[in-house]
Every structure is written in C-alpha cells, then in structure tokens.
View: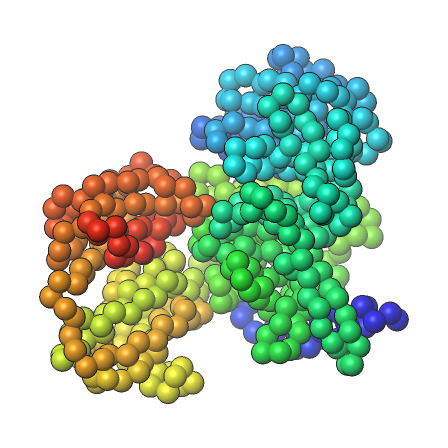
Length: 552
C-alpha cells in the first residue's frame, strides 16, 4: 500500500469514529410522478417560471410549466437528432446556455442559447468529435461566458475541456500557469464566490480577474513521520450562507490534526470538514436554508435523500433498497444524480425507474415531507448591549424552520464550555431580551429550536461583554419585523437611516429602497420564497444592520 492510500484510509477511520448520531429514519413521505417523458436527467435550470431539463441523447431539451412537458427544438425549430442532444443547461443573466451530449459527429450545433422563445446557435467553429465528448457546465465571470466538460477546444490553445466565448467564437480559456494541472474533463462546477471565479475539479482553480491560483486546496504536511502533499477534490458544490459546501475528497486541518472528509465547507479562508453518519454521499444542492444530498447509509445499504441544516443530518426521504441500480453491480446511489427545487418543491432526477417504492421514471417530486422531523437549526445569531445598567442584552436570529414549537435560549458564563437554558420563546419569535445579566461580564449565547420530535442543532455562538456604560444616545438601533414574512417587512429605527438593501443568497441585490420614516414598510410579496440578506445603511454610509430575512 502506498503512503497516500495508507494516509487516506487512516484518516477516514478516525473521522468517521463516533459519527452515527443525528440521522432520523422516516419513510412517511409521498413521491409524485410528474410524467417525465424520457429515461434520464442530466441537468436542469429554470427560466421565466418554467423548468428546463437536459435529458441527454434521447429527447434532449424539454420544458415543463408545472403541468405539461414540451420538447424544444435545438436548432432552427428542427428536431433532427444531430442537433437536439443536450447534457448541460445554465441560466446566465436570463439566457439559457445549452451544451451537447456526445451525439453530434459534425461538431456543429453543440452549443446553443435559449431566451424562452428562440433557440440560437452559439458557435462559429466546430468542436472535434472524439467519440465521447460532452459539455458538463457553463459559468460567467466579469461578463465572459465559460464552458466546461470533456471536449477539444475548436480553435486550439493550451489545454482542453475549458473554453470561453470571446465575442465571436469559442477559444481556449486555460492559462499557462494551470495548464499542467487541468485534467481533460475535470471541471465539475463553476462558481462565483467573494468576487472570484472558482473552477471546482480534481484540482481547484481560482481566478481573481488577473491571476489564477491552483494551490489553495493543496495540503502539505507530515503524517507518521512521512511528508505528504494532498489536493482536496470537489465533485459537486453549492453556495449557502456565503460559504461553498462541496462533496468530494477533502483533507483539512483541525487543531493541528489532519481530517479527511467527503463533505466540507469553505468560507474563503478555511476549509472545514463536515462529519456525517453515511457510507457514501452523491450530489449536493441548497435551497438557501438546507443542504440536500443523496446518501448510502451503509456499504450496499439503503439510499436516502438526506438534509443538513449546518448542524444536524436528517434522513428526509427513502429512495432505494440496497444495491442494484440501473447499471448492474453499481450502487443505486449514482442513479439519483440531480436535486433541485421548482415552485417551492423538491425534485429528484436521474436514470431510475423506481423511487421510494413507487414506479416513477427518471424525475419525481417530493410532494409531502415527513412530519416527524425536528426543526432546522436557527442561524445568524447576534447579540447587542443596549442598556447595561438594566442588564439588557438583546439577541436576534434567523428562523430557518417551519415546524418549530419554539426556541430555547442558552447562556454560558465560562467562555462557552458549559451552557444553561435561561428561557424560551414561542414559534416565529426571533428576538429575546436577557434582563438578568451583570455589567462588565462576559457571556456566550446560542439558540436551539424545538418541537415534539426533538431539538434542532444549535445556532452559531455569540460572545458579548456587557460593559460598564450604556448605549450612547446617538447610536442607531434598528429592528425588522415580521420575519419571516410573505408580504411586507417593516424597518424600524430610533434615528434616521438612509436606505435598505435586500440581497439574494447568491449576492444579487433585489431591492434597494430609500428610508424616509422611522417605520418604513418594504413590499417583498413579489419575491420568490427563500432566504435573503437585509442591509440597512446610515446617512454617513455606515452599515448599521445586517440580518437574514425569510420570504414565506
């Protein structure tokens, strides 16, 4: 056994020890057949309220309005097979970009765009057919469109499998500094994160607009006296709460100890492995509140759709019993390869003929969730001292659950080593005033949601010192209510503020409103359901509030 294999196996044994803890087992869900007219799902995205599916080499490119499926022509409204095969779809700034799936031997008609009405050819040069090529994804950074997959770039250049549109044709996008590390078909995801462009793959490449870096996720160290160098590998990734959550094979350091994990998160500075109780995980998706994955419970065991709230894993919905998927001898885990939401409901796609004991072909909707689930953990806990002379610390947090009975407030006086429950509030309440503190004292707080089926994981912990003086009279105090809301939110302030900005989970500003009154109402009824970030800015440009807002 070589050192790398020995190292990985040892770390895996350590990191999985004692993790069988928080998964719930429930099969009380309902899968609905949406009448998908084909036998595979390669990729999905939405445009103008409709769902689009890249099916592969059979039908190719389909549209769904929630009731009816329509086959969309891929080239001049012509359904000939040479041009209809699609394996990648990406909505970029209101246009769908479509890439081919190893079907077109001419190399023309491989890349198209769709604006909701017209399919247009998006190439001038042909892609060389090499017997197995396909497009896997598209991305955009600083106005440039990129394509990734397993293909030869038609206009030459360094490397293959990564191209960009230069305004008139596809050209190589591989820079010399990373050409030696980029695999032919190694790009699994493109993400825009903290103003940088990430290519997640067997190596991960980060572009800041000027330079490429391929060393961020390379760990160099010593294990059992032997030096090693290990590159963490992403096979799929999503953005949630301003972090990248990825699945793959990761090595990270925790307190000087090397930890191997199959799921990890990256905040732009630190890679943190996430423990889980499963044998294997495939695919990852986020709806802004939860992480969803497909998971095999034990080797050759049952397959579930599982959910993670940042603290706790829950087995959300049963998919398949044991082994024996579409491909004989390969776990059914890999037959379920797409998770996404459409019209506020979770869908599962792949190349399956059965899901949850139901005969459903390739695409199914999770139309009802188990009811016996603990709530999701609250997040974004903040603490503010308003009147230390009265012992007043105000807490606020984001409610990520829709089935909680209430929240438990816990406090520590020994730097977070031991916590005591000091009070509770009812469901949907997201603020609490602790009136029992002592001036000039350090406290640590956390909040836990609960219902009849158990407690959620804990929120983030916040530390605060109550100080010896109260809030200055000219300090701005801002509150937001109701939260969650399905119509309007109110920005209430004790002093004048300039404006409020609301951002989506991907950092896109969706509302910007000038604040003219102490209790300004903002209409969010037209926004999609989900999680948003609210920022309130003072007249001098200072950010005086940053808070998560949930649109019901």
